[in-house]
Length: 212
Image 1: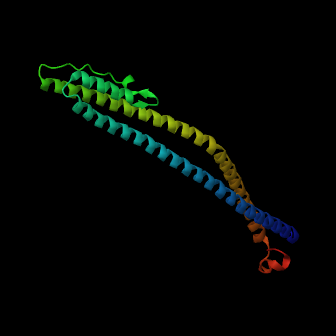
Image 2: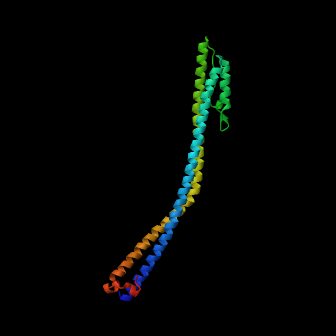
Image 3: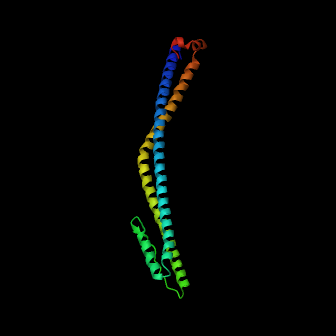
């Protein structure tokens, strides 16, 4: 290959390398921006998920404490009367609702029998209260978990809908970056090959020939 062709090949390859490098800077900036947008949105959704978990955990804790405290109040206010304890227990479970559904719908109110002695009656009352409260706690936990799962599913669906276009855009930019990297390598190789074929005297004074 003659000197003029080598000069042309080098200059062309050098120009293409410069173009690819400038394009690479632009692509990297776009990729950084796209990645930051995704990370920012993921951070927002992570905070929403954490807030949702806190909300439902607080609901569970609050109702659980109410049930426990109410159970002790019912026991103390029954004065050893099975009928009073049963009525108050039914009122308690009917007055606590999850998603508009009272706990009494899920918990069987035990039929408290009056014992032969006050001690037996009090024992029956405590057994019934503990049984009902235990069932209510279990149902409450299940309902809260279901509510939390539904909220999380809705949040995840919304997150996917908003993140998918950003992820697709990031993938497109990444694909463009990969192609540009390949082209940069190819043109760099052609540049170096052309440069390697030039005589040493010319390579030493390349700027004089416009070969930079």
